[in-house]
Image (cartoon, rainbow, N blue to C red; front, side, top):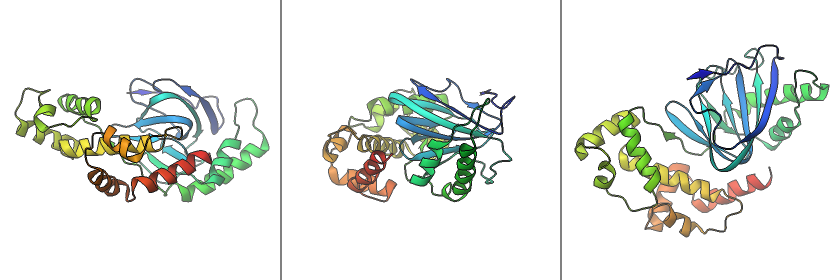
Length: 265
């Protein structure tokens, strides 16, 4: 884990923006200031020590100072914009990374802010102050997208990597556990102790996570049925049941909600 210093010789708030092709850093890193991160195009995984979360569209990540994280690109190049803040400017008493749904007003303010070391216009400062007041409320509107647990045990990483490379297939427990030279029972036990979910719960979570990403792709013509089958389901009713269990809405409702959001961005 590394620290990326950002504050020296800079104002209490400043911006970094650009593109990511693969990841922000290869290892987890942290900053000595707060960060608001938004993705304008593409999808990234915000990876933490214990879980990873998708970030795209009007979703915004608040990353408190000192918390380790990294961004990993999914698919095409990602365009991002981050506002970094001195802790004294924004102190919501939150000690975890939060991904929340920013309102259209918040997005407009965020996009208008232009802060640099050499010159900062008065309108940007006004927009920043308005944004921070708005974020005190909106930061509590957590996104409905699911979190994927991250294993700490290297052996369990082999299990999750196998699932992530083969989730579109029909998998049995013995096929998954064959990557390790232990009994199914032993592997199942150490997996659940580490990730707090069973192997098949992780498989279900990962499949639904992948289907949610596909549903949000604005240029995709895939039907919900084809998405379900491409993510390893052989029963549409099972797919709907699992999707509703995790997102509290049907895949169709999720698709309509998130595609509207992407188009309005």
